[in-house]
Length: 109
Image (spheres, rainbow, N blue to C red):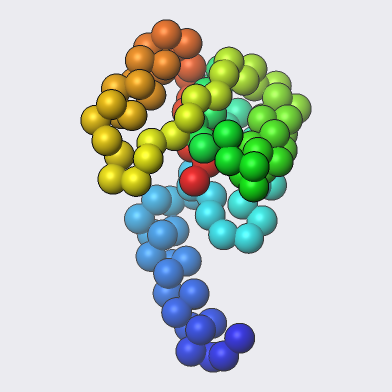
């Protein structure tokens, strides 16, 4: 990487960290933090992801196993929203949250 790229990445990381604080994981290695962060928030988790995508399915499984290993019950997983978050998708996700009553929602995007 060039110094310019490193500088841009450092600025982006600082911006996200300042905005979201320590309870938001992103970038390389963030999957290692998901279980710990999830356990700090709740004991029942709902995953929201495009889990039917063949390339994302292994990541979803890894995250779900990690969360369960941290003592958090994974109560389900629902398909995420399509581009521009159509109203129907938002309502479907909200209905799933109301149905399963998770203490935390883990979005995998």
